[in-house]
Length: 289
Image 1 (cartoon, rainbow, N blue to C red):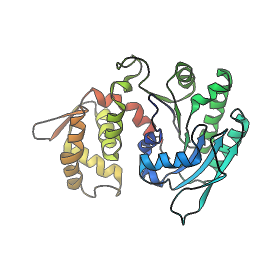
Image 2: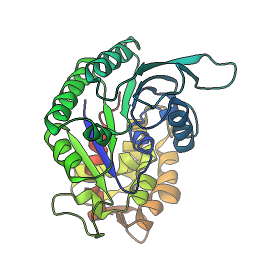
Image 3: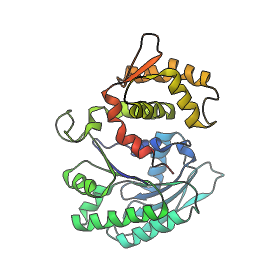
């Protein structure tokens, strides 16, 4: 399973990044949240705002001052509350690890994603060596649980230096004083809002993956076959339905954002440079539970 550091400035909800995981709708995903900044209530409100619905199940580990209560309502008034484990001290990392491990093990094989809301907050209370050790131990916990994780952070130099040494994927947006991407950070050439708009839908992710694999122009009908094959009954039921959806909805959206170029009749799709920029996001999405 991949683990990703998402470094964003100005601050942006990393729950939006979790929508990239969704072979199943993200609201059907169980979530373990480790919160340094947000309260339990704020996290769930943020999630609902980004995703539209509550997770299927949620268990939270609230660290320091981030929690006001020991349980929180996660759904309608009739639904059960979910537990919140409170760790009083922001630097009590052994307790955070133990609580996270217990939370992940509690799902008994069901799909679950870990979300850590503010990795950079650790640098306020710990030295870099201690942060690196904690992250390495936490990613070991994730590996043992066969669970992907998303770690949100502000894109400061210390956080990014740490992240690149321990995470599989580092996605960075908006850092520095220029809109030009760093030489080794191709994903930043595409505006974050554009990338999320494009990759939010599973069909468009399938199309981009197919274009990356092909390495050249692909017939729209072949892409329709790929969509039917990959969705496995959860999407268009026939090649014709998939073709119509591509022709009228998804390929025009990709063309509008300069991800693809379409032949005049729409029958041939050619990848543009932005398709390559989506590669790290798709790597993260493939680690979905």
